Image 1 (cartoon, helix red, strand yellow):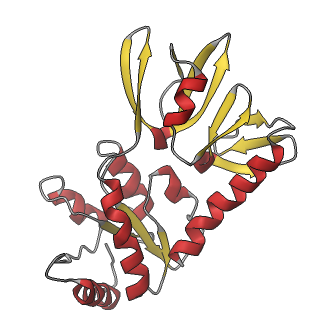
Image 2 (image 1 turned 120 degrees about the horizontal axis):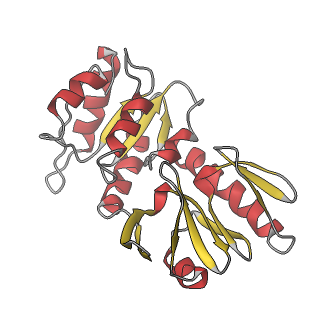
Length: 231
């Protein structure tokens, strides 16, 4: 999705260049978020490329709107601005690529698409029954009074009968245990200090002395990875 016709044509040429008989690729151009929403979900792409700066509704707002109903649609951002790079994690983006888009960058992005056919999730038992939750929406899990409480991004916390030690093996690499009773999704960490970390919503959580170095390494590696892979 690109409001600049010249840039859109360049992207289309790159897609054509990467198309093969085994993996034919086609590209459709939309100049605004509203024009794409008008035909969705009847026509859903295998990969949605979003520019951040669009007329009226911007690309990040569109991504959040998509995620309200579709947690699995592969999407990525292409922009001249790096202001929103960490926001891409909030919508489970495949990448955040700085312009200009090159054949190598697009090929790397396309290589990630098959990995998104199944969104990692947890099936948790609560007092109201079973709850299915996508892992990318979980900010952190903590043990309170011997019960695991799950803190999702845009819904109230809830408790599950599962034990934290049993859930940890099923979590994706973006999660790390920062305290004996707390596991955090690094996608939501905005700041890391010596004895604590802060999430995007302002929540401050303690980091144990034992886990301090491991958390620091994971934090740096996690956020460096997106920039190194997609720039």
